[in-house]
Length: 178
Image (tube, rainbow, N blue to C red; front, top):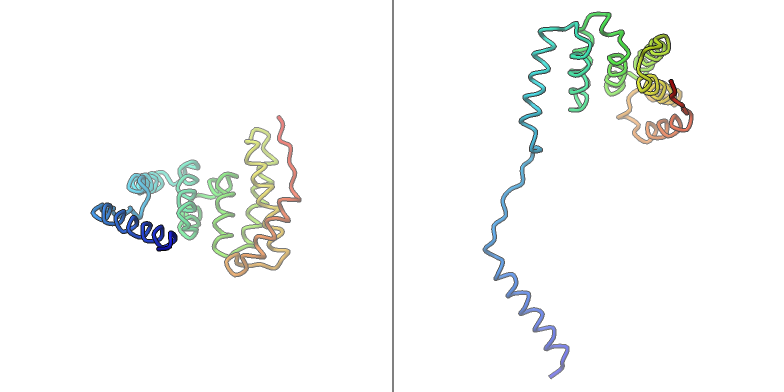
């Protein structure tokens, strides 16, 4: 007999024995939602309740719009912001979210206009956070590149949108010092 056949037969018999030994182990189904999903829904419901009770609260409107954007629901985010009073919508932290929501809804030119207004508001306010000024500058540069590329809806041209992002990343260099 050939030694190769003995080794091959031994491996096959060993594999069958291995499968027979572990065939009784049952694996449970994995959950579809993350472990904190139920908590996340409760937190979202709480934010919605707070926004309904105090629609003029900038932090509540921003938190709710941000939560909707994280859940990829830009239509709900724009609805929350558009229903807020004008002084809330004009706050830079809300305007940045509004521009992002408009962009994800395929309204790139509107997003650029809102982002520019937010950038001007940040620049006019010496007490505003530096991170917000940097964020608006990045957002304006990106939206300008997208508009220059002729992209109205980022979902229609993901490759062009990615190229616009890469061009804008090379353009903006900010040193934040106070």
